[in-house]
Length: 75
Image (cartoon, rainbow, N blue to C red; front, side, top):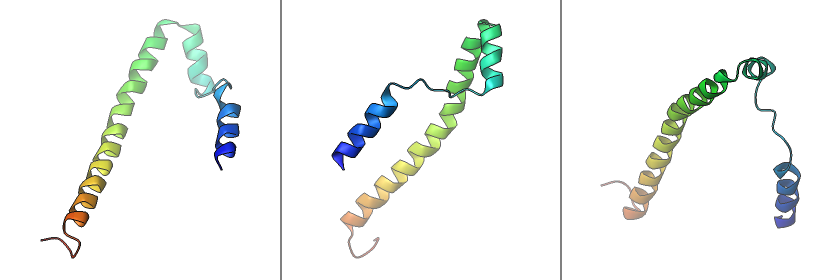
């Protein structure tokens, strides 16, 4: 299992990523000032997603500590 992960990581580590759609890539290539705007927009869109992820993680962690603290149920 460990060698499979190592092989998969080595295959994908050096590949260039094509994460942008063709229209976004074309727009950024034509106007360099759009690059910073796109980067800021990506960071702005990451904030709500990370907040939801963090909220779910915190709720799961609290639930786990509560269930280990009171094994018979919540009191």
